[in-house]
Amino acid sequence: MASRYYLQSILFWTLVIAITTLLTCIVWVNDRSITVLIGGGLLLIIEVVAFVINQNAVNRKIASFFNALQNYDTSIKLPAGNRSKTIKELHDSLNHVVSIFQDVKMEYAAREQLFLAMIEHSSTGFISIDDHGDFEIMNQAARNLLGTNYTSNLTRLKSNLPELHQLITHLEPGEVKSCKIEINGGMTIIQVSSAELRFRNQMFTLLSLQDIKNEIDAKEMESWQKLIRIMNHEIMNSIAPIISVSKSLKPIFLKNNTPVEPSIIDEKRISDTISGLEIIESMSSGLKNFVGHYRKLSQIPEPEKVSLDVMKWSGALKSMGLELIPHDNTDLDIVIQDGVKVIYADEGLLNQVMINLIKNAEEALILTKRKKIKIVIGVSDDGKTAIRVINNGEPISADFQDKFFVPFFTTKESGAGIGLFLSRQIISMHKGSISAFTNQNTETVFEIILP
Image (cartoon, rainbow, N blue to C red; front, side, top):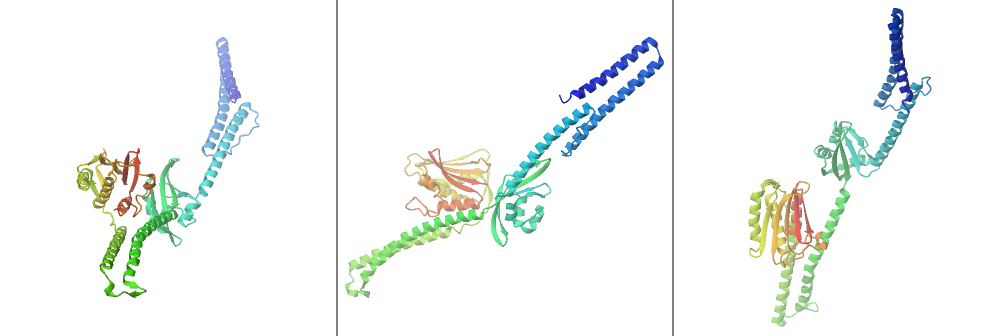
């Protein structure tokens, strides 16, 4: 065992001191000799001092060893060659502990190098900031995104990238926000997420940065392509009959590119002309309305948010809803869940969205006998305001779920296809989201999430 010689040393000195004490007492009792008593006492003192010196030597080495470990010094090496078996065995044991610490330290150093290499080669930018605002870690992706090779402190970011500095300083842990910044003469969009970590009694802020401009551009391009396809379809549907009717009317008044004589224009030709002009007028009016609807998409005012009392607002909402739906065959119910008292939004714009959703729900119930529309005002899983408009009509087809909010897409013959798109635009301007889904294949749900 590692402590065998040390234990033997303690037992040896304890036994020597005990025997010396016992013998001195026996001689003193028999002879009453002062000389024996003094000699025995001196011998006992020498033995105790030797024992203490031996223990102090061990204690000093142990204290020195742990002091080195406290200072993260694993290079300490105690000499193996020693005449004292106790000290030699102690040195061997402590050297073995040091070797274990060295192995652990090397393993953690290797892992740290691996993690740093992974962070450095990641396409996502990473920055760690201590509680003084100093940058502890900043990988190459972050340096590329910020357009700098070296930034030591958060305050230095303020002069170069004030928008990003403003975002980072006001970003709460767990939040994800984005901002536009100018890098190397070009504009890009940086998305930043934040987290906090306590390490060695110090708080660090961990930031991840991503350039999402290409992703946004791709989505915008996809949206424009969808819009252009729909506009092309709608415009061509209107223009084609106009062209066709115009071609059919032309021979009535032209023959061999020469105007016909007025005398041959009879009632049938006049009737055909009037019918053709009515068709042209109708299709032109439809095209004009389509263009008018398109203009509405770019004329949504900025929301003027106020605190809306939920009880009061829901009462007014129910009154508006009852005016929009037949009273005799559709039930409209509004449920306010616990914990929701105030909604922060533009009342006029939010009412416009709710009117669109109620109308959409009513139109989805045409083939349903017991028509039910329920509006639930509550809280989402992440603590935000959730408004759900639920109807018991036919479930939403999976093919239509992604198309509902595309401009000019409609499944109704008389629909313009901009109501839901305008609703999404309004909610997006409130920094919220709107989605549609089928709830357990029995109900259709349009859900609004507001911050």
